[in-house]
Image 1 (cartoon, rainbow, N blue to C red):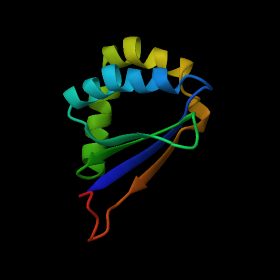
Image 2 (image 1 turned 120 degrees about the vertical axis):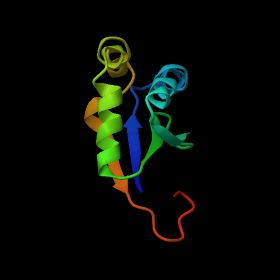
Image 3 (image 1 turned 180 degrees about the vertical axis):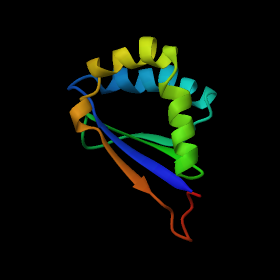
Amino acid sequence: MLLEYRQYRCHPGRRADWVRYMEEVIIPFQVSRGMVIVGTFVDEEDPDQYIWMRRFDDEAHREKLHEAVHATDQWKDIISPRIPDMVIHEEIKVTRLVPTSLSMLR
């Protein structure tokens, strides 16, 4: 199993808009395409930080689902163009995690 731990920096004052967009548009769309969203979080101390996690069986599964989401016209033409207004793309950090044997996230 493979997890993506994704840290996003929102433009100042835009995190609430981003959370709403994630919950109403991005997450439902990605889930409809097969993504497993493990959790979404806001940083209690940093008003511009947003974190979410996705789970995959392995790298091949990750690539397949990435294509199933990001290669669609809906993603390219409708969903993705709104992201730069809320998130600072250059500050997105993605960490790939592999759970240890005692991890609750499996």
